[in-house]
Image 1 (cartoon, rainbow, N blue to C red):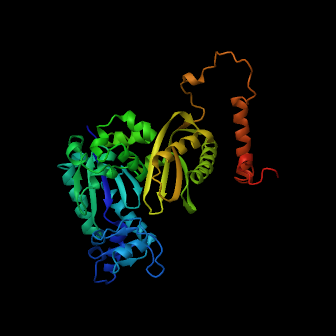
Image 2 (spheres, rainbow, N blue to C red):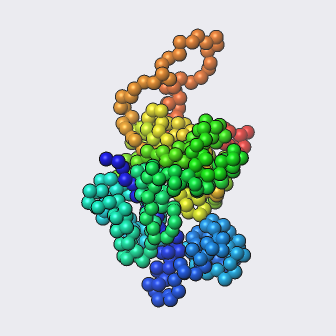
Image 3 (cartoon, rainbow, N blue to C red):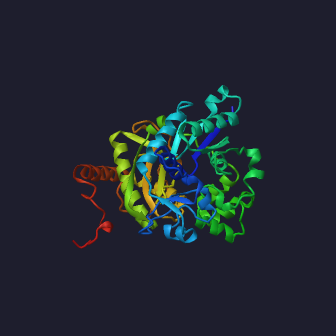
Length: 410
């Protein structure tokens, strides 16, 4: 049976949840019906737009832009500060409700999730009717609206849910891609960040359809592996599974909210290196190796994105986890300020489990003119283990590389 995936997305979540709470407490004006935003402070004119109403959108106000710009576009704009504890409460209620249908749910942010409908499809006349039932019950029970996108994979379901809003159900199956997705601007393709879109424009690629019909080798030449992924997405290709809480629990990871937003690749890589070290240590303590590494980015606008990559062979080594994480970050990052970074490993197996050898494991038969003075793999492993033991006992900064020292002469 073909997979059926729902992508469920709350319409202007922060603004909707704030509006519902205000109406509960006697407010007579629904801020969803007037030019309004969540975020920033009117007096200080600091901060960014976290969510906007449809009337605010008509003034050209965009999520993520500075509040000062939004006020310039609409001087009488209504503003409310964010209440993240309130948003977590509404998010939990929504997820609890959806779990009454199935446990196969992957929550990807506070206001959106994927639901694998395949296992419960027989209980409903059709996926579309089931989606309308969910959507209408959410509105009736909680007072806010959602969009639901339906397809055979996560990518197309996500694209479908972004079609006309609010309070809608849309489908985007492979046979509908040509008519519904290909005419859209390439900037609307999932994971197509600003820098990628600019590169594609230089190649005279302005729509998703034009990208889909371009030789992938040309895209890969200019955008590397991220270009290949965008080309696959433009053609509706995605086989990633819905990772329910039970599935995600079978992994080891770590994330950190940054003291200040990261805006440079070098800054992000320093954070990723520390996270990789922590994850590597936890894998070794659990006597596990990982076959998959994923990286999560949360931007200053609180939008979250993640991507994963399979390792050529299971590993618990910091170097391999860090290298893979850097590749994933390079593919994911759209250049906007980063608030949180995370690394997660999955497809775990026992460190002692037998594995199939690859060609790279075979000893070289070439005769070297001069033997290189390098540590053997066994000695390298012992050195890493010794360093990790010291760090685990005395802290992460107990042992550092010479190149990372502020004053190497000391």
